[in-house]
Length: 102
Image (cartoon, rainbow, N blue to C red):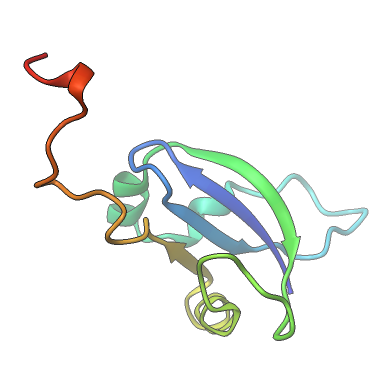
């Protein structure tokens, strides 16, 4: 399955995977790939910046998500949203020395 990956302008480390159809010679320029998203999700995602095109299959490993979830979501919804990993930022951790009182 071919897909294109875009990153969100509103949330760090949020990405969307969208199925990319095979190009044809006579096909006119397609509409925005984000048109598959519901309007509220497009607004929440913000401006999409293209990251890369990727060929995914059941045997391919992805860094932060299960490839089977990605494939299933693209087949059923037309897209997959990768949200930022949890637990990387501890809001209760004291600020680094240089940032205290800033």
